[in-house]
Length: 204
Ligand SMILES: C[S@@+](CC[C@H](N)C(=O)[O-])C[C@H]1O[C@@H](n2cnc3c(N)ncnc32)[C@H](O)[C@@H]1O
Image 1 (cartoon, rainbow, N blue to C red):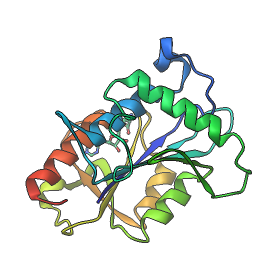
Image 2: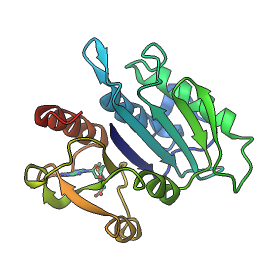
Image 3: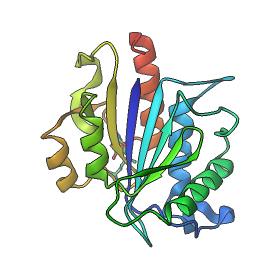
Image 4: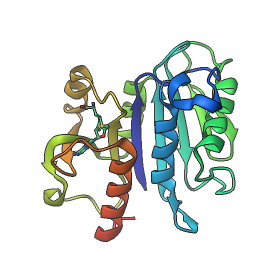
């Protein structure tokens, strides 16, 4: 299983955005949709071995965390187009409105899609119980020099704003920084690259 954790610094935590102007009204939920596309979609096929967590930290009610669970997801629910994925995120945020403030309970929105009030740190702490954590950062160790375990790997990455120095000091106490190359790439491109790289290594 491959896990990707995305910190969405400004992504709205209510279904208050316009599908006609997703980048301008949602705190860049368009970026999350593209990241999900790169995480799950293959040409005419779907990656069942992937789990994605997205922690949304924008207004009005942060934090909200979404979990997309490849083995349970119905490919017909998660389509490659951004707008249908944005609608699903809106639906999940609607369902998440009623979760009690301090609760870490997850609510099932659709098969394989869950919403909770977990913070970014809560998500990381859940994941590192079972998965070694790799922090995707431009100045990390070159990915070609990293010896990955044979299965179960988790990667954390930022959005257009990136991971803060506070995030990095926490993350580096529980994981290793890894770089895919010398430039700052788009979140969705980084996920696509890592997926393809793990495919080539034969890591499920
Ligand atoms: C668009 S970049 C963030 C840019 C942000 N302005 C910054 O300087 O951190 C999105 C995320 O992709 C990951 N990323 C970008 N380039 C990378 C690279 N060369 N190697 C590994 N991860 C990278 C990082 O996690 C980053 O937070």
